[in-house]
Amino acid sequence: REAFLRHAGVDLYDSLSPDGAPNPAILARQMKAAGLRVAEDDIWSDMFSRLLSERVEPNLGVGRPTILHDYPASEAALARVRPDDPRVAERFELYCCGVELANAFHELIDSEEQRRRFEADIAEQRRIYGVSPPIDEDFLSALADMPDASGAALGFDRLVMLATGADRVEAVQWAPVFDPGADG
Image (cartoon, rainbow, N blue to C red; front, side, top):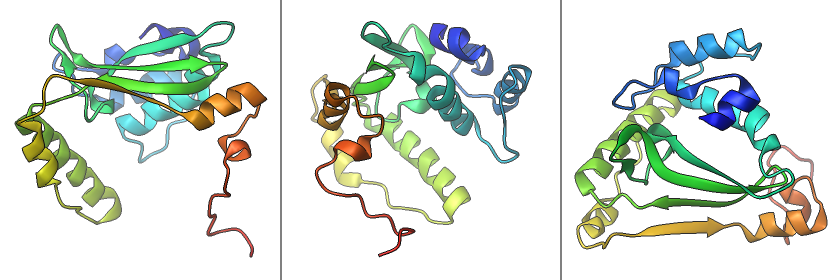
């Protein structure tokens, strides 16, 4: 919340209902008031991502490592929601020099809640892309036996970027990424 207020002039929590449901109209109003662009078809998640990538992330970890925590629950599909504040999930990211180095969260192991999230995601994919991928039933079944857990994904390519001063991840990848729009 503090990072979005400081770097984007937007209070994300104002656009989240007490149960965590995002309100795109409120976030769009805040973004426009802060002089930021909002597309006609933007959903809340689109606006969140734009704010994060354009205004917040470039300012994180400058001068010292920084942890961005308490992500909106809608932006943490596999993470547990904080029991004391259903607006946010138990997720954090580590930043250095404006680059995300690690993403971590407390694993959601409630299969019924995970099913509801998957179904909402599938409905959104159907709306945007016209496709409905299947739900991973094996994954949902495995959650019943999963102990309480958390995990962190540390991007080696991000560490190499930091060490070499590269400004794009493509500059440090060992093999080129296929670009269907490129010649050749």
